[in-house]
Image (tube, rainbow, N blue to C red; front, side, top):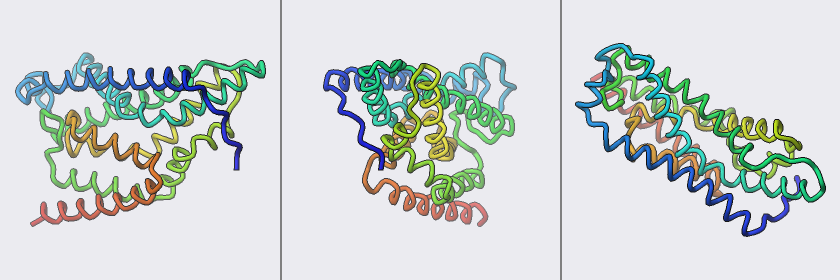
Length: 259
């Protein structure tokens, strides 16, 4: 069992926590503003829902939406590992070991989810071209919706999911194994932790195509679920239970679509 990280002074915890909360609130402000400004008629007029091919500006807008969404959803779940990194880095600095600021660690984490935003935007573009999304970015195919639920549910039960989740649930272990001094190492640690987090959550993000990419209820619900999986004592077991619930719901919807 790796040693516990040294305690972080209260002042530093408040400063880092406030910065992460502030970043999250800014992202949610833009999400709420975008949701308020996007009616079905406006989205259809802009060309979403298979009305016309996307322009470069359309792709950039959708990518920005996904990137902001990922910041709003995933940065809160990275607070425990960020505070642990800051504590270990502070101890290293006191020992005169060159360390990078905590912001670089967070930047690596955000960079991984920004890369995922590119993939998500491409997936949205493909579904839009296939006329499988409504102007409000909800799947119009019951079969596709059921498949998304079943796929996300089964993934919750896979060894890959559980292995990635364990890294997210044990941030002290992750930092103690991978901590290296220097800016590049700090960014890489954030990037790798983001990769584990992505491996844990990527199919859950696909649920947004079922409930609505711009649905604040679905965005908030998935955010809460991911956070609960990571920090609650029963999070891993609850995640598997939710997986079976998703599979069951998807099967029911699939059967109904065939009747």
